[in-house]
Image (cartoon, rainbow, N blue to C red; front, side, top):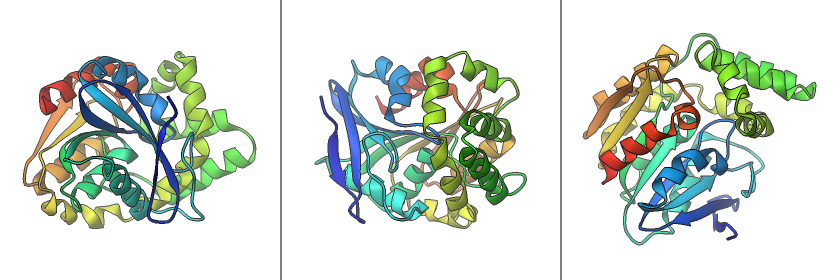
Amino acid sequence: MPPTLVTSVDGTSIAVRVAGRGAPLVLLHGICADATSWLPVAGLLKDHYTVHSVDRRGRAGSGDGTHHSLDLEVEDRLAVLGLFDTPVPVLAHSYGATVTVLAAARTEAISRVVAYEPLLLPVGGSLTAVADRIDFYVEQQNRDRALTYILEQFAMPGLVDRIRAIPVAWELLMQNIHTVSRELRSLVGVNRRLDDLHAVECPVRLLAGTSSIPEFRASARAAVERLPSGELIVLQGQNHFATLVAPHLIANEVLDSVS
């Protein structure tokens, strides 16, 4: 089935891949990825929900605009939510989770959020410097080194080898590595938007792994402190890419939270 296309505020087409049966559930991926990164989780959920997996702008079935910003990503999310007549739950990861919690502050079209490791606080070092290094590797046609570098910066030691051991996942992340630098730059100063979360009306379950960098757990705690109906679930031994290496844990959190 070809993806459904919606048009965002700047005219960019956003692709939504639909599978499964039951009530709708929207999935929003993180950095380096596209909607196919959700296949391990979606495979566990498609008998319970009609899963709508979004390709964020600039990759796979979606188009791209002349410039990029966090606000445009939020607008993309609002456009996708316009597909539904009633509020729907959203499962989101990483950058997509950041976008989702900010979108939830602007709309009543989300019934519940399950967000795995949004980044809402500054990280050690400069996001701009990391973005510049990624751009350098991409310009040198060394996507493998660019991906290794970003994983080393934002994930646990040893994760590179674990992801490499899943060839389809490694190729997917390399394919989209060129989108990472602009997304990192868009997160500079994102902590100034934390207080926007006071306006979120739906329940939000924040997930964070004990083996990810501490900033992800700190971001989740900061969000819970501001959300009117927020909770934090810590997943022991999991890293930033639990969506790929432990999909059953993520699916179980959705089934528990949304059902």
